[in-house]
Length: 413
Image (cartoon, rainbow, N blue to C red; front, side, top):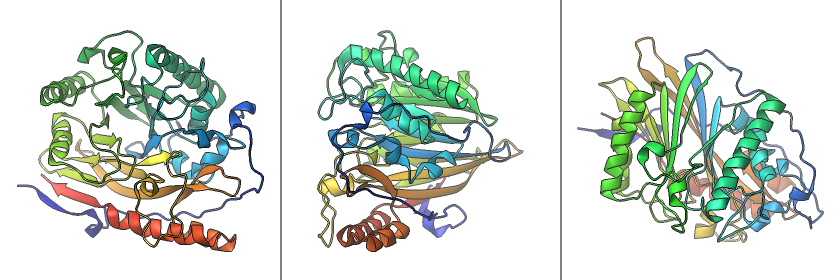
């Protein structure tokens, strides 16, 4: 029989971190996208250097990195990440989902057929992200050639980052040759800070059927899910690792925090098959998290049902004067960095020592630039000081909404 409680009742597992915020704005309206500026070299600590003892690792899981038209009009893409960069780079490994092709042979494009630029993605890498899923419902927005160009671009980013910073960056979820077999799924298998990591991203959704055999695409049917669960078990057996992380761009309604029992059971089955972390996305808003403690096997495991948008242009008109700004688009403007500290015990078990939900928000500054800010009281006080009183009150309400709308749970088995 499983027991479930709010994780907040167990402070040894959950620490809410409030980091100091600082920022600056400009009154100049930007008329040209940052893509036209030269590629900047952004100094960064080598994230492959261990930050603590070899038996502890800290992982940061973000949500969807998107790029609507408004996101490109900024003086420099580095500014998007400036106020959360220290949080991202402090983790041993930071994970994010790239919600678009990266086809450099075509211009940047917004909804409904997205396309990102290399510089836009490179800015996320420079901010400290290490591991990226390329599997989602927009992966084939630019058709087969867009997928193949995305692979080329991801390799160029990997090479550039290794040469400039000495850091290893990982992308997976797309294939260079057409193959719909499970055995052809692409994944990352690497070592970081003395930990062997297996990372497998999949999507259960595609907006169009084109070139699905070039993507880690798993149909959301009971039969396909059952086959995938079996495959994950075999993959874990053939790839000994300390952590097996599965990214699922899941087949479920967008913009709702509801978690169906079918979806929950699927993620639990993946944990039972050998995954340590199931990191789900697609809803574009934040959902609950669940820590699963397996007392029989001594391995703590984790499910994140959705971490929302890390950056996007979906909230172009925030309900600044609303007393309860919970509209669909308002929810898409907030995201979650879920920071997880894991420890290998001497007896071979693995414990999750700490989980920190660090909320973020997409802020539209006075230059109409979309940038990421910590969703905390320091930011509120800054907005009152500027002054941008309506924004300050809005962020206060959004802090309360996110704290009340999503929870951390703990479940024993």
